[in-house]
Length: 145
Image (tube, rainbow, N blue to C red; front, side, top):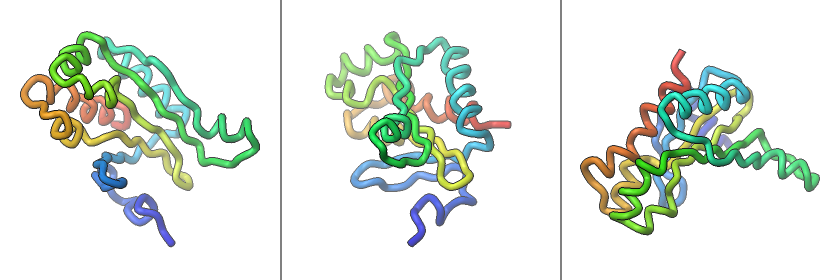
């Protein structure tokens, strides 16, 4: 049975349901390693910081399990996140920003919570919603040729 991701390979930017959450998935033309390096570079160029990279597939291998290459990158800027969390304390559940870079077959994908869904969840609008929506442009910069 094909997964949602394998069924829609020709869609470079798709928004789909994962449980009750909305998720954006973009196809990267780069390898996993190059996509991660580009993500780190774009984050730094925009004055943000990578706080952590969680290597899910590496940890799975450590305990003898097989998992497609999957890495979660947590990044952001306290100056951007603080006003959002101040306005909506539970937004700290979704901040700092996070992106999962993963492989599906021979393709590298970049997925993250849809900014509009996150903003709706916490009743954010205006500049507060825009600070979360910046992840769309950031990930596009990562995958653009």
